[in-house]
Length: 133
Image (cartoon, rainbow, N blue to C red):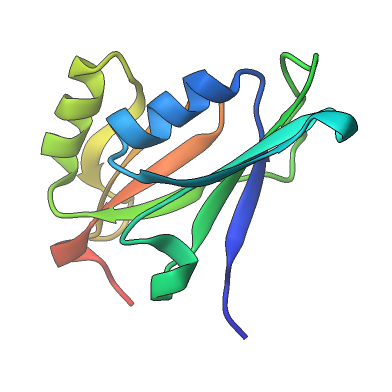
């Protein structure tokens, strides 16, 4: 088995694509318009996504639904980056929201930070050289 994608429902597809591509550095891999079923999908990811063995994020826009209640079950998506502090600064400069500044995880040495996408989903940034497997 292989992890293929995580689906997030979003209130504004263009805004979400902008966040994940421009601010997070992902590529828009493909879109699927299902107008007869009232939704459009956009898949974003790194290094070509599934075709190169990488997981993707499926952004789902259901027509006419501007926001969702995340509930209490959702946690976050985690992305490995080379330098968390530099990545946070790049995201902040592009207008992104940092919700936890770069620094070691409590009780450990792994350097992390959290950002929030336009729909309020949390994205954890983990510094590659400090990541514990």
